[in-house]
Length: 61
Image (cartoon, one colour):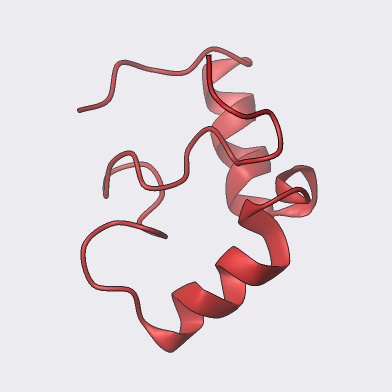
């Protein structure tokens, strides 16, 4: 099981959340600092994905 302080969607798949996947842009760095580590419950993308998957992580490669 992963670290609960890290967003479960971080770096998993471009189709879900592209932050942390492949090239990391300055915007991605800002998002990682603000939300991915410890505050992902405040991230609009996380809330959208969590609502879509009802708390269950889809199988991502």
